[in-house]
Image (tube, rainbow, N blue to C red; front, side, top):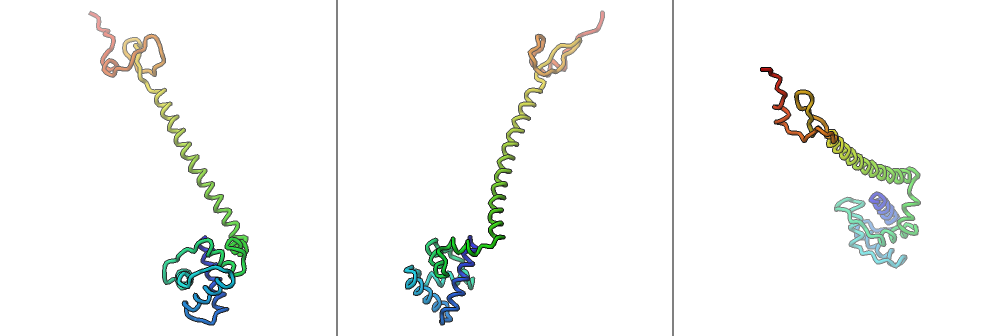
Length: 175
C-alpha cells in the first residue's frame, strides 16, 4: 500500500510540474490546492500538499499518510475514478501475482504454525500417557526377591517401596 501511495504522489507532482509555471514547492502546492477545489470540489490545504511533497518527493520530512478521501481525490486529478482504480490500472501482472502469492504464503505460514502447535500438544500428551502407563510403580515377589513391574492388577503385586525392593531377599542359609 505504501508503494502505491508513493507512486500516486510521484505521478501527481509530475503532472503538477508539467501544468504549473511555479517552481517553488509552495507555488506548486497553491496550484494543486486551487485545482482540487475548482475541478473536483475537494478542499486540500496547501500546507498538507507541501507536507506530502516534502515527505514523498523531496524526502525532507517523515511521510504523512493521506486519508482515503485525499487519495481518491488525488487519483481523480490523475483522471482515475479513485485510488483503487489507480492501483488496478497501474498494477502489472507481476505485482498482482506477487500480491496473491504473498497472501497465500501468509495463509500457509499460519497453517504451519497451527499444525506445529497441535502436533506438539498431541506428542506431549502421548509421551505423558506412555510414560505414565509404562512406569514400573509396583513390585512382585519372584522366587527369592522382589522385582519392579508395571502395575497390572496381579494378585500378588504391591505398591513400589524402594527400601523393601532393595533389602528384602529370601534367606537361604541352612542351619
